[in-house]
Image (cartoon, rainbow, N blue to C red; front, side, top):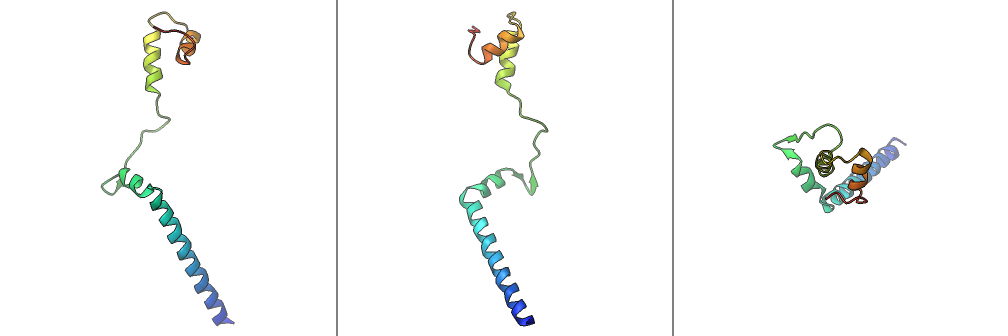
Length: 86
């Protein structure tokens, strides 16, 4: 009985290694290894700024429309393309 259990453990171990190799192969085929390397500085992971990325295009548009006297609603409409902001 103990020998049968040991055999099953070897089978499970082998299947786990095969599954892990398949996952690594897929990871590499999808180009994720290169992506991972691009996010490393030496052996450290690059630090990203906290929070959501800013929409700099929208922020610049708001700064341009505000001095022109546009209301908040006009600015929102202008950014969605409904108002001619020129």
